[in-house]
Amino acid sequence: KLASREFHGEASVFDIKGIKVGGGHLMMIAGPCAIESEPLLVEIAGKVREAGANVLRGGAFKPRTSPYSFQGLGEDGLKMLKATGERFGMPVVTEVMDPRQIELVERYTDLFQIGARNMQNFDLLKEVGKTRIPVLLKRGMSATVKDLLMSAEYVLAQGNRRVILCERGVRTFEDSTRNTLDLSIVPNVKGLSHLPIIVDPSHATGRPDLIPAMSLAGVAAGSDGIHIEVHSCPEKALSDGPQALLPVQYAQLMEELRQLAQLL
Ligand code: PEP
Ligand code: MN
Image (cartoon, rainbow, N blue to C red; front, side):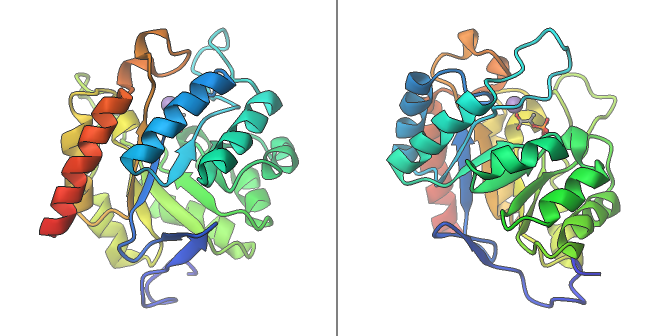
């Protein structure tokens, strides 16, 4: 299988607009859950960039549980994301939810995000596999490690070799956190696959008080990056406000991560 260690013995390392991914390089993705306005995005981007983030995230098409919740700004949001990424010299990542959106999103993004809810949308996986844009593939909330690797296989089999996996928590009986972070997947995947894997403690825990410890633990476990939602006014955020870190909290966490990286 193309995702396996047998196919490719060494950890895959590739480049996304000058950012090295995999093989111990840390991809630090940060930004708001949803793009809400250009000034707000610029404010958050400037702060996370200064703190050391190297990839900017922001959703323009949001997979909301309720159809009455904010669905994202669509193409207007994509334009804001691209402009802001260029302004701060950061590659950008945004979710694509449907094969029909690929042509549009491709014009604005440096990295496609496939959300947890679409991890087994096989037509979507095949279509992003035909593009030359790298793919951030999030683990489905009840997907096994094998399921995740098979989904990656769909993308790889179409010729797109730049796939990054992302652990974002799975559903369990535990209800004091949004999901349950399965950190063992990091060394587990590293034994089975050459693909980079990053950790998203924002969606995994849903709790700002737990995000720093889980980020440090992720890096200690061998994660190739950390994906964190940051908002300068979480109580007013249109999506995932309760789990957002403030820019100052993100900066503090980045400092702790740098100290850990020196220890490692
Ligand atoms: C997100 O990144 O905002 C998101 C919707 O993530 P997930 O697909 O992991 O729930
Ligand atoms: Mn979110």
